[in-house]
Length: 128
Image (spheres, rainbow, N blue to C red):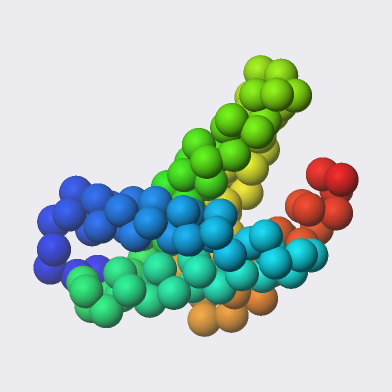
């Protein structure tokens, strides 16, 4: 754990996740490998937080994933509204927790990126 206050660590993690959620929206349109780009962006986000505060725990990764997922959902909101409010609700209920889980995996384990890629890939397969 670092010497920075909990709120500062979580706020930084959330801000980084939100910015990368926007970047993910811009970059993930590159076909079927969009989820790979999203997970690599979260890996970069956890690395940025690690660089600033010195050391990260799963909590910082969870916050990166949470704000990444929320930001992604907000930017997808208007296109989804054309399909109905239920689509937005479903996306919030399943996609945001998946991003939280993968963010935590990335921050908690050296090989967490592998697990995050597998989980996100399976998630996309199941959600088709």
